[in-house]
Image (cartoon, rainbow, N blue to C red; front, side):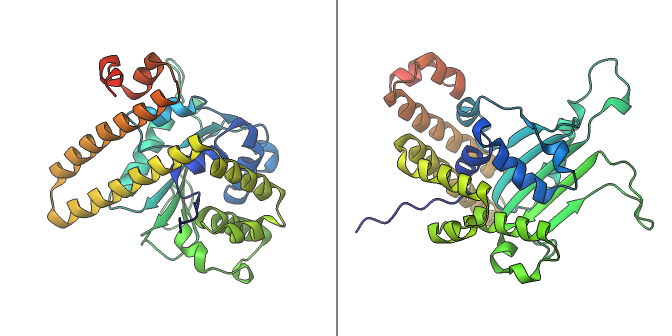
Length: 292
């Protein structure tokens, strides 16, 4: 018997397909209200900054399917889901935060014009700093806890912890809402999602989008391609750590990325997408694509 197709929003493609599209900005807002200490009025009317979804999917940054947005007060937010915590993740997320912060100032402006920048990282497995569901990191004085400035926030959400935490352990409704969203994102069980969505209109809307992905051959293929990429990446990292071959990891990613581009280009060619657009998105030559 053929195994039923199961979707989890831990998959980067599915996560962005649900939360990173214009028609679901209200769903994204609901999630952000559970994470950030920002009034709902300031999150209303958020602006998605990466509209070219499929072009990004096909690009050399296949490994980063993040959601970039700006909220009403000018704050920039970057959201990313990662199935596995790895040893350089803290440095990596700070690096991406710094790029976002540095890019927020125009030539000739003084530093006070730099925007507040927030990164939100949802981690599937392996987060080992503590057992908390939600970590919020700031720059502050060690003893007094006085913030140096309020323009840096790095949030880490532990999906593994969400699986074991119960609503009765939540201190308030906001934490309860966040827990339910994290359970919704983490699971691949339709019945669990359906149960969680019963009391949340935004989860019901997200669940409807997941059902659309399940029924669409194109979405299913992109979902499965992403899943394969994430499995290959995890295997490569694990093997590299065991052998201590950092150079081998880099070469493995390069080879795997090229193979994934070929597979993706082939699929989009079959879907009838123009070869020039496929070449632009993947970085492959027209000759390489024509041979597929």
